[in-house]
Image (cartoon, rainbow, N blue to C red):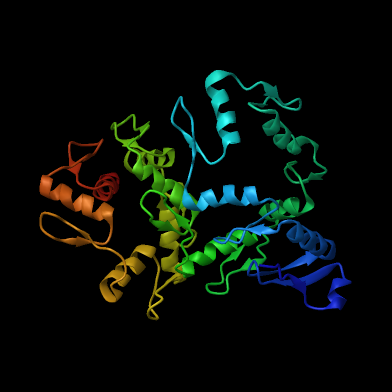
Length: 352
């Protein structure tokens, strides 16, 4: 696959700003003429590309290593703690955690690193000529600095041609477009389940491990991820609602809940059915629609009463009712509940 980036005309190439279309990246943007030349040279050097996400590499070996982000493969295991890695060099650096302290200190600040390579990469922050005038952070290239500056300017040059949502970086747009398609390039190497995003795959892989190292100090419930524990504490053991809806002033415990709520005000329905013209605010609504009307996906069936649920979490909560299991305990009174949602509603009621 060759890069097809080109300018609209030779006249525009002579100017400082040129309007560019990239069919390889599916975005349009205004960039400087010298950046076009850099982009062209870079793509000639990077002759190997990933067939899943089109990311390009200079070496075939780097491309093979990158593909492990799609498959979830981690062939290198630590013999001390069983943690696994995609590359041997990362494993070797990890092993130093068990054997020695970080011995490569930065001469400009108090940070230290386990390897000289990690220190060298970090020192770009202090030595690079591409320095942000707003925060002082440095970058290895002018292009990286330009992208970083969009944090302060609010510039979002890359727009989705389906829903109009805009992004500061081209790769964020490419990832976003999977919301509107059935593209799921990330595959679990254990159960073959497919995912739209690498972070979702990484989260899913913890399902195959029984290890739950993050324990709640208030109710002793354990979690596989630190983030899940943080959300659990915020939802069930505190009244903290840091996320504010700018339309109505309602507050939420998680950013995801706030974003889903905002769609009620905007009327946006980003999830579309590829079988009919129906659109939905939430992905679970689309999945339920596909299950009920287009026979797409898998129902989760109760082995006791044969009730069908659209999510495994809903099935687990349903089975608790058969077993009369109520693991969610109110810290204000003796009441217990089958689901976190029921406990959350209870807490909101007594606090109001």
